[in-house]
Amino acid sequence: MTTATRAHVPATPTAVWLVVEGLWAWYRRNWRSSAVSSVIEPVLFLLALGLGFGSQIQPSAATGGLPYVQYLAPALVVASALQTAAFESTYPVLAAFKWKGTFLGVASTPITSTQLALGQLLWIFLRLSVSSVAFLVIAALLGAVTSLGVIGSLFAALLAAMAFAAPVVAYSATLQSEGQQFSAIFRFIVVPMTVFAGTFFPVDQLPAWVRPIVWLTPLWHGTELSRASAFGTGEFFPVLGHLAFLVALVVIGGHFVVRNFARRLEV
Image 1 (cartoon, rainbow, N blue to C red):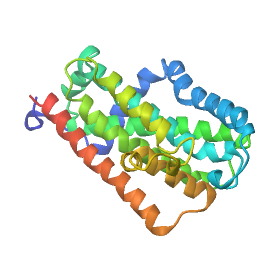
Image 2 (cartoon, helix red, strand yellow; image 1 turned 180 degrees about the horizontal axis):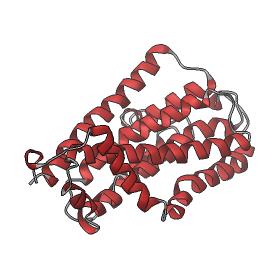
Image 3 (cartoon, rainbow, N blue to C red; image 1 turned 120 degrees about the vertical axis):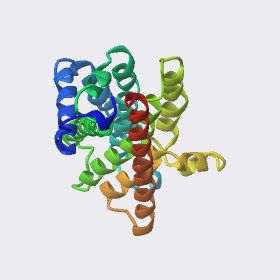
């Protein structure tokens, strides 16, 4: 059905929120499994690596003179948000197109494909917001938060995660079957990015030829922003560069999400 044949198309904010409500109606009955991966797992990482392994690491220039758990927390909130974004941008999107057919059902209503695409992105943003806030609250209770600058870390985490989510949602909207594509995203992009993009140790400790690859990842830019805010070490031009890179990914990815949803649903 094309938009030209639709009647009484709701205003975009209303339609986008209706999409979010529909996703929430399913999620509120199935939230437990995702809570483990998006909140409990990063907290366990913080306990094991920050308080456990980190107790053997002395504060140094590499950790900004801070205990390792405080050095790790602002980066871990970015990494965990990005991992959650990776999941929310792959299997649920393909399922809604192919296995559950919910997107096809929505497309038969006056809600347009653009409104549906924006609703899906807003839903992912809200999911990331809740899990990231929960992680930071627990991190604060564990003494891993150094200042109110961690609020800026939350913003950095959400921006970096959406910079990764938008292009992946656009890609997922083009797939007709699962295949090995999602496994490849997690094995060859998400996991290496988490390990090497500055979450656990400074990037300048990597071989010189690896660093340019790291600089292209949204996780590295988000981590740099997060630590700059949490530790109050941000400088104007580097921060502006990180923001510009991440915003560009969100805008470009969002454009392709809207385009690919229209191509698949407006037939």
